[in-house]
Image (cartoon, rainbow, N blue to C red; front, side, top):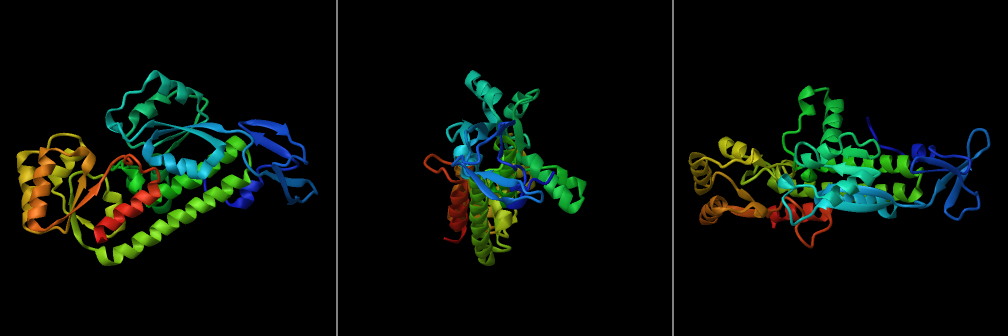
Length: 324
């Protein structure tokens, strides 16, 4: 379902000084300072909208990569709690009793999906209260609708926060869910527009950088930033055996590491993309080979690093490393 909403059809969700909040319909005084009258409908009733949310909904985000976008769009309409922060490995996270309580009490939950945070997806099974935005499902549905290609329903790489397309889809769907929970709220619409403009700014910056990067080659210790690399026009030459082992969180074979090292020492790639949060003796060996051959090493992280709380700024600064 396409959740992109124009201001017209968001505003059309309420009328005649009726306010919808958390699924409860109540009459609001037309003199309420938080209610703005926008005009009259076809039969002469007032069309009204809340200026700001009357109360905050409980929103839970499974992993910290999506937290800033949720806060950017929902603002004071949401009490946002994030389960897996920058100091944990989301793959291996085990829910605490307090996490389960937060999920049970949530009005809206944002999960990454594609197997990345399966612990959150499974915990929501049978939850009849919370609305759920699964970024991977939203992206696959959008790709299928645009192409009618059933292969687009499969998301192989779960690191979706590096995908500008996935970011745009989440932003528009957040506004849609807010309208269901809170009614038409002018401030949410404004924040959605402002966030979408910020995303467009990042897209423009990436397009500008891709002009000098297009068709340059890279190999990566993990597929964390593959979506970003693709947007920049880079070509992935990571040895297939190594890439598959990394994706399946298994140990790469000695032969695949040797092949990776030869790729670097032969200067067949321009960049080595290194996930610094998963450093090992094997990745140290690859970094040493890259540096010896003059291959530029670009550091990336999987979760937003400590002190970085804005996904869009992080993507932009990461992209700048390729041209800096």
